[in-house]
Figure 1 (cartoon, one colour):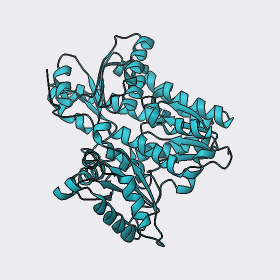
Figure 2 (cartoon, rainbow, N blue to C red; figure 1 turned 135 degrees about the vertical axis):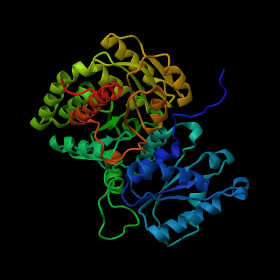
Figure 3 (tube, rainbow, N blue to C red; figure 1 turned 120 degrees about the vertical axis):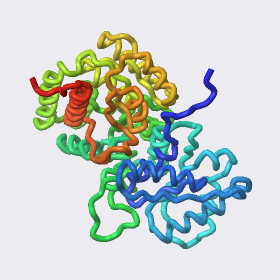
Figure 4 (cartoon, rainbow, N blue to C red; figure 1 turned 90 degrees about the horizontal axis):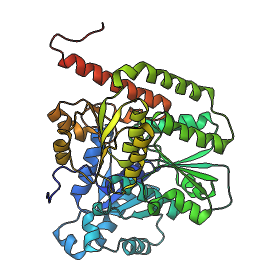
Amino acid sequence: MKEVTINTCNLCAPLGAAFAFKGIRKSLLLLHGSQGCSTYIRRYMIAHFREPVDIASSSFSENTAVFGGGENLKKGLDNIVSQYDPEIIGVATTCLSETIGDDVTMFIREYYKERPGRRLPEIILVSTPSYSGNYSIGFFKTQKALVESLSSSTGMTNKINVFLNILSPGDIRHLKYILEAFLIDYIMLPDYSDTLDGGAWREFHHIPPGGTTLKKIAECACSKVSLEFSLCMENDISTAFLLENKWNVRARQLPIPIGIVCTDLFVKALKDESGFPCPKSIEDERMRLVDAYADAHKYVFGKKVAIIGQEDWVYSLASFISEIGMIPVVCASGGKSGKMIYLIESLSKMYNYPKPRIHLDFDYDDMEHLLRDYNIDLILGSSKSYKLARALNIPLLRIGFPIHDRFGAAAALSIGYLGSRYVLNNIVNLFIEKLQNDNPVGYTYQ
């Protein structure tokens, strides 16, 4: 029996908190732990987005790890306030600070008390030790902490909350386009479409412009419904269920909208909540996607696929490739919720193919040995799947996070009818490229 993890599929929980706080206007994240934690996260995000990412640290030393990091945290907060002038500071705990038992809530309370008369930002604490979950868990817990701390109801409005999963800035912009096509007044949390994919500035900004405002977050409790893009999260970290239980804001959980079935569910929710029919521009995109399915059928039908990534992404991608006649043979995630198992098994019954091998909390070393037993035609996964794909000579479609060995990840579009068509195009082109590369005389149009 294997006793160690060699190359985990997981990314740490504070990374999810960093994603979420980058989507809040004039915010900065401080990791309560060692400098290595913040360096690791900055490295991943900068390589993926090609944008500057500042993440502060309370910089634990050996003494701090023994006696506690309260003073380091307060000094770090002072430095952030003086240098960045944020409206909100996120404090995310790490494995080290959680293990030694730092009472960070008390430290923050003392920080305010010891600085009377000073204009201080909101400080939001979120508990994100990596041994309690991966980066998706950190992302969802941060969403919930923001809404729980800042929202209050002053009466219901006609607005719709849109609580995101981890998407690309390009995906977020496309979501906004769809929402605005339905004339919907929405609150999106978090919105890092500008902060992690900005333009060339005329002047330097300590904090990139963009993001959801604190005022918008406060209004979440007044919305009529929350749309939350996750079927695999546990209910206790759901922001939508928090608002439903506390403020009677209806909760609707949806899959990430990839492919026709999952995107249809999203569009139906928008039709239900807005009272408007689907705009012609969106209907036209759906028709083009259906036509692309027919055109691509001869290239993709019956191909065997391994999907590796975050649980919600794995399910939506499995649904998408099942629609186009491909077979998800292996589905793997570093997550542990278990909900992905039921969802993917239901796909195998719906599309009448053998139940896939489903792995949770796996590592890439195990996956290489496993895939050698299958005749896999394609891998869907992040850049962390590259060594696996290379070792097995299998095409890799890079999708999700992180993508650090290709350019343009921030602008990648994978969701909605339009994004699904782009993904399909890329899959077909990978198969054609593989056929050309493997043919000794070269394959061309016949």
